[in-house]
Length: 237
Image (cartoon, rainbow, N blue to C red):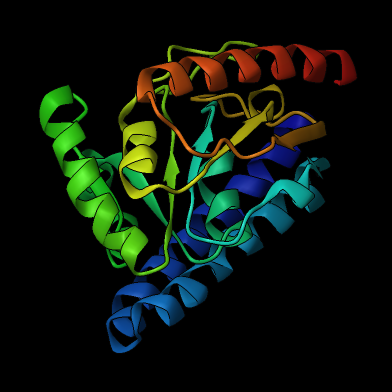
């Protein structure tokens, strides 16, 4: 049953992603950036609905009251694909700090580039930091929040990796808060796995960290917060 549910999800997911990518490439350039984001965010919202209907995966969000007025920097753990499309429509307006290789994916990556993400070279931390600060400053000045996965790569369920300081340095420079988020999406949608497992994805939004004086200390503080919160989430799952 899990296999059939997962298969039905992927059939709709891949077909709809292809159609959305084509529509985005054709219509996106005709819209201003904020309307373009709204238009392209319809697909991830649809994909999450399909995930719920086909695989019986429910999303529970806690801490919505902590979301400050944009702009801010989001610091989230990274377990798979789910959070990349959920955040796209949950926060607005928002741009993503991501690895540049994603923009090379045919059709989908081209449409993604229309959202004006901050594409960085993860293999060169010094250059990546300079790019994040330069382009992040421009986006924040225009009122956009920045989505940052400080672990840099996906982690297994229950794990929290070391948080890089680039997103925190950006928040410090621009004097905007960091919004910490942690979730357990990998329990239901494991990275690089075909099967999707029914259950609940708990997404916890913490109190924003403001007036950052040290990006290194802020990264450690949020990393430790995420690790403790994820332990609590494991008890709920």
